[in-house]
Length: 148
Ligand SMILES: [Fe+2]
Image (cartoon, rainbow, N blue to C red; front, side, top):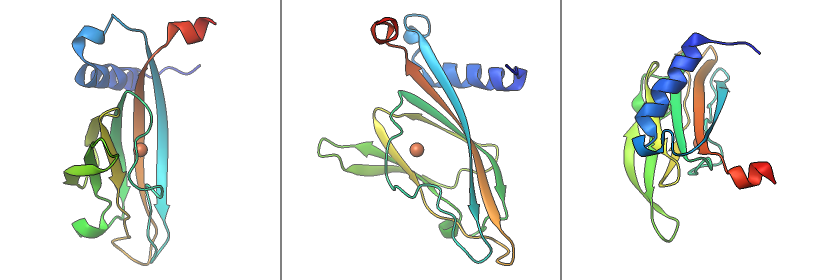
């Protein structure tokens, strides 16, 4: 198994930003890391979230935008992140509408909000574009399920 001090530091930093401090040691945590690249062909549209408004099904999320290559500078065509509060009927009210820039991150309590990212197009339409993210999920481990 490969080890990365940078990734370990990122996970620790995210953990203390997101998880309520009383839960640091009171609960056992499962941390999952994935990387996702959404590509967009020349003159095309990149769709980071084809399923639309959703939750990922985790307790907490840290979504790090690590690269935005050749993505439009027009904010309406640049992949805007949207965060919604959840209502009883399942609908949501928009709380955030922002392009998360390269080097920025979005921290979410996934059990209380919904999220989405709009499509993006290339700045230079003759070349492809892509958006790279690293997503870190934090979940409480259910000891009873793990041991049965
Ligand atoms: Fe998601």
